[in-house]
Image 1: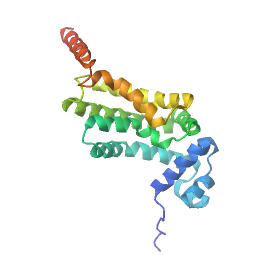
Image 2: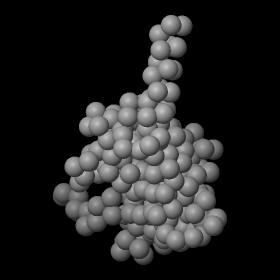
Image 3: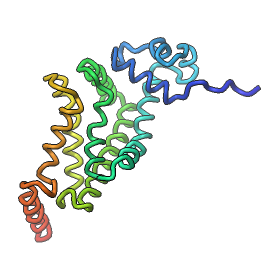
Image 4: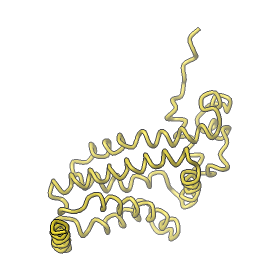
Length: 216
């Protein structure tokens, strides 16, 4: 006898779990809550993921595995690599409508940092995120949208700004999350934009640094 076909894909269940985490956090999440959101029974989720921990690990695995595709989709949607970069950097905000949702997802970050299995997947996601930003920065510089710069270092700065900016939005609660994060990302990119009055100074600084490195 062939197994019963799955009526709901894992991706939809993971999306449902993310919604529940936004409402109650990972600590208070139950398979029954996720099942209700996804239209499945808790027993079905146990059969598919084994446990609540198994479901949360599936979420982290999915995030790590889909990171490259997410960057590819954003790039395909924007003719400008710089516009694609800003879109990618602010994409995280689509998961958060309220400061409470930010707080609940930060609880997942605690798991990522303290649990070895989750941390391994977080490192994979983080490395792919850095490389995605670096690749878009390189494209933007090659296209003349940015001055020549250390794209690896700038990618790290953008990564740090995005996470910190979202938390600051949750603290100050002014405007929308996407507008707040975009403003901070723009501030980081401003000195490197080819048409910025500050870009000439940035270019000279990068050139001097490169010259010193060659002499050393």
